[in-house]
Length: 266
Ligand code: DGL
Image 1 (cartoon, rainbow, N blue to C red):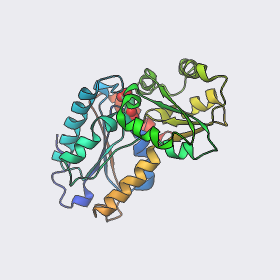
Image 2: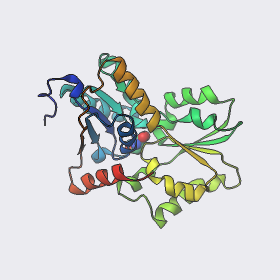
Image 3: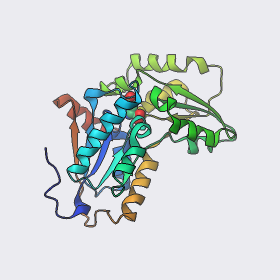
Image 4: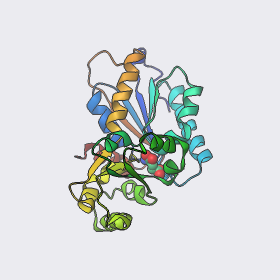
């Protein structure tokens, strides 16, 4: 496969956006809002999903092999639109490719903590994100300012991968997940996995309207724009940008799901 070698102007080359599956489309959505003229290649590794219940070495190996290919084929920047892959591999990737902007994502804990006076904040994420040092460092920064509860959510991303973003079964799954917090007043929930924004509506139904939800996509999109501007890599001519989907499950259903999720209202 070859996508960008014939691109004469580097600024026209695509930004590669990568996730373990279809979740990173929530970040792609934010990138398109921030930079609609850019060209994007979205790659989902659904054949190897979920990443969040694998071990660190395996997620690092998978992530690095995909990013190697994007860079080899000429991507001008890489957005690792997966919290799990970011915590496993982004530091290593930046050392390996010091001249390519590589942007990762982390749970949007800061705005959640700042949303109230010592709020009760739940961070939903994959088991691996919650286990890793990167998350512990992030939590340490805000520990005195809020009551922060990490909530690993194994099994949730599978609903979104299967195209289920609204169903009685999903609602029951979320109810069970939040059952232990029934007696607590929750103020904010951080969606620390890029799949979860797609079930915001169901979550809001289960949690009630007063609980605020925070996602990392918009911050990551702003950071990507900053980094591209710094490197003089923003696309300069204002022709409409393109989005291309690729997935390690090369089925028509996956392709359709990607398109559906990209068009999904928040
Ligand atoms: N979308 C990925 C994230 O943001 C996780 C899903 C998975 O377990 O593969 O962490």
